[in-house]
Length: 55
Image 1 (cartoon, rainbow, N blue to C red):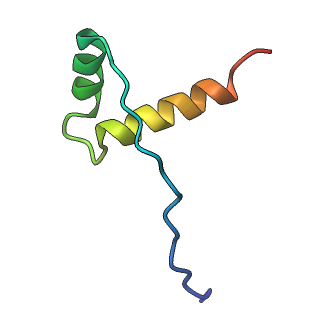
Image 2: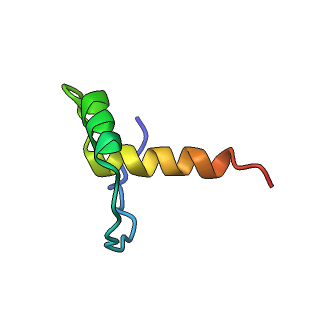
C-alpha cells in the first residue's frame, strides 16, 4: 500500500467576471445532478481552452 498524501489546495484569487445569462443557464443545466460546482466547471473549461489554444 502506498503512503497516503494529504492533497494541497492550489492558491486561488477571487475574480469577478460577467457571463451572459444564456451561458450561465447552459452551465447550470450541464452540471445539474452532478458533483460539480459552477466554478469547477468554468475552471475546467478554461484550462481545456488554454491547452487547445492555437498560437
